[in-house]
Every structure is written in C-alpha cells, then in structure tokens.
Length: 176
Image (cartoon, rainbow, N blue to C red; front, top):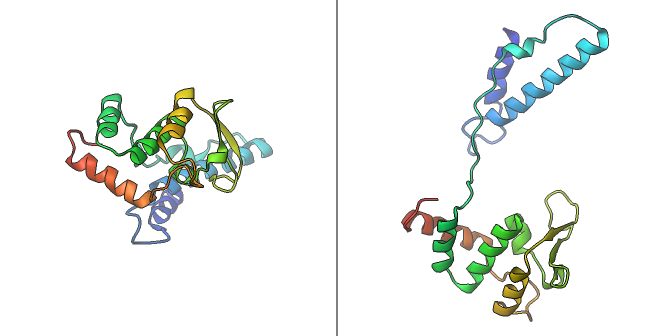
C-alpha cells in the first residue's frame, strides 16, 4: 500500500512542470532500483520473503519520440533536399551518430583509407571517443559534393534542419 503511494507521488515529482506531462520513465527506473535493493537485502539477510515490489505494476513504456525512417521515405527525403541536407541525412542514416556529433564533425575526423569516422570525446554525449565504420561510398560522396576547404563537414544549422525535416514530413507524401 505504501509503495503504491510512493509510486503516485514519484510520477508527479517532475522538475519542470512546463516540459513534461508525466514522469513515467523515471518512476519505472526508480521501481527497478527499489526492487533490486529489496532483492539484495533479502539475499544478504537470507530471508525467505517475497519482494513487495513485484506486486506493483510499472507504467506503460512509450516507443520513443522518434521512429526509424523507411527506405521509400529515405528516397523521398533525399529527392526533396539540397546537397547539404542530403549529406546530413546520409551521415545520420549510415553512421547512427547523434545529430550533435554530425553537426560538429570535422574533415580531419574522416578517414577515407580506413573507411572510418572518428568521433572525438569533446562532441560525444558520454565523453568517450569512438570510431564508426562506414561504407566507402559515404566519405567519397562527402568529399566530392561538399566544400573541403571549410573546417566542419556540415556547415548548416541543426535547428533549421530539424524544422525543414518536420515541415517536409507534415506536408510531404508520407507522415514521419
């Protein structure tokens, strides 16, 4: 009974009331943590009790904010875009890199001979460098179609790209 009250209080405990309608994800994580702590305590003391958190149901999980782009949608987007937007889409689709990493990518981080993209720790989300293997056509296409004399690979604003893509998905032949 007390644990279900804690669950109801936790779901309403959000930092910014303007940003979220509920706190389901954080509440589910807390329930998993509490369940783990109870299991460790039960195993440590050698008790033969049932974990009370097994009776509390988690909130339903969402599938996330984004969904993958299908092949036909990918072709339509590429057809309706400029060279710079095509480059952004190709890098995002073929590397799996985060948008912040793509928009801060430098030419020195592309290795055409090894077919790799090196993401520096400074632009990575988790502060670790990583190497992303890519198909040979991607780096060749980027070097052929983009301005190599500039410092960054993508000379485009992230917010304007996001707005363009959302406008295309609302007005286009498909709904993203």
